[in-house]
Image (cartoon, rainbow, N blue to C red; front, top):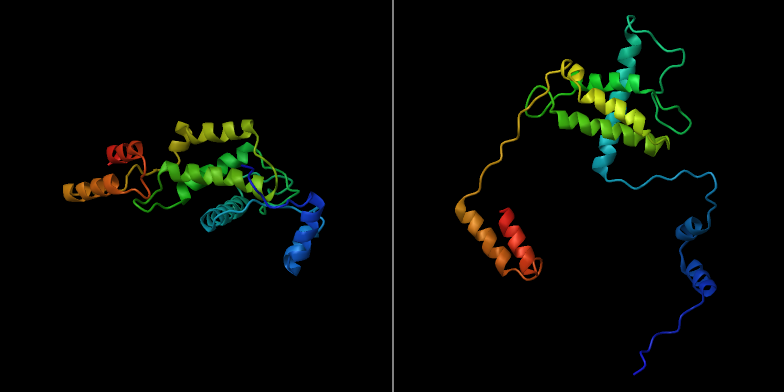
Length: 202
């Protein structure tokens, strides 16, 4: 039996039809020239918040550094705004920024943050340059930064916390209820292999 399908439009007909059906705003987006327009990947509000926080810390660090008469200042000031056209700062100044994060950031469980928090800010700083200045941070640059971050010299500048968040244990009755729900569910956990894996994790 021949499978029936609706007649297909040609590419030209489909394009013309969809342009004709589009509203004014959509049609403008479909036909606007893209030459010279910079685009950014869509991010979650949480990620954008981390970016804004990292940019704010970078500006505070540069202000503090510029205000210290004992620190030699460069002939060309370091960029406070990360935008297209600015030059990526060298790894020496970024290492100073990492050191600044170590003794400035405050933790939630302790006075100082854990090392993983600072690592997250370093990666966010890399992302700022790729997203807002369209400058990917070179591998050699990242290697110098992370080597300093993992060195005893960095550890000597701040008393990073080693505390871990308390993880309450569940009662055996709760565990039994969860396992029974996993074994009986056929909507979200459809395969026996998935059931066994989830039960093992519990």
